[in-house]
Length: 296
Ligand SMILES: Nc1ncnc2c1ncn2[C@@H]1O[C@H](COP(=O)(O)OP(=O)(O)OP(=O)(O)O)[C@@H](O)[C@H]1O
Ligand SMILES: [Mg+2]
Image (tube, rainbow, N blue to C red; front, side):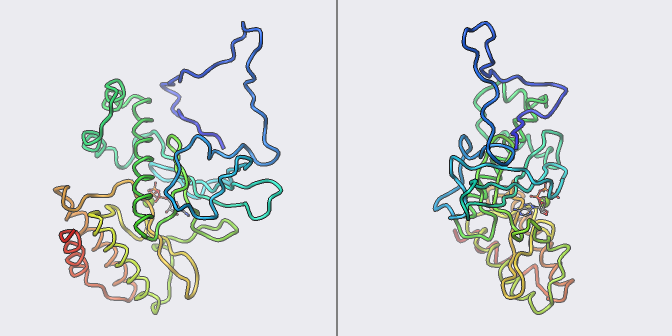
């Protein structure tokens, strides 16, 4: 897998890499040694790592290799790939992960970037200007900030015990996280496409309610919660919800529109349950969540 920092062809930013000095007596090898298997060496080294205690399944070995197994889903702002990382000749050190790669094109949250950037400390005015004027470099920086924001949020909510994918690592505009799906690489369906039996709905709703309450106790609303951002993992008695897509969490109290976002999240999810045969009073859910946020 390659971490292509700058995908835009129109304005290529050239980082000050150490290039091969052809005049030098001992030229530097520009082709590092290829791995024995897979496409490349593990990208663990040099990336920012997820929160501890780290789950056992995370492969951190220096000798690990990686392979991109293809696209799970392309979206407007990001593509999600399936990535395998394993240690050659070591049984059991073999894991599938989901790689969310933010694109540097205009995306859905673009109009919110300005407000978002104001709240962030971007030290270099050159970078601030690039983001404001939306040069390719500026867009790349913004994509990196969204990736970092989602990664940091996932780390916090994972540590708080929410049912979310474990955030494994962050490098540039790519976030690697726990793959939610089966061992063959088939991703768990989104709630919007799943048809859980009606008798499971009360259990699933309780899971959702608890997750939203824990989140509200942290002071946050997801901000884009819908049956498209909730995966139905496991089968039978093990069926459980996993909440994904976290770059836009909203501070319920601090953001003047916080309660509106929370209300929308509660209504969207409540309506889905009601439509599928388990009646949910989303107004009541919203009230409980507001109370949780206010009692922090
Ligand atoms: N950890 C994961 N495990 C399995 N599948 C995942 C995972 N994360 C994301 N996906 C799949 O990729 C899709 C897109 O992910 P996500 O919602 O985070 O990105 P997005 O850019 O917001 O996409 P969209 O515009 O479709 O909402 C999800 O709907 C889901 O099908
Ligand atoms: Mg999504």
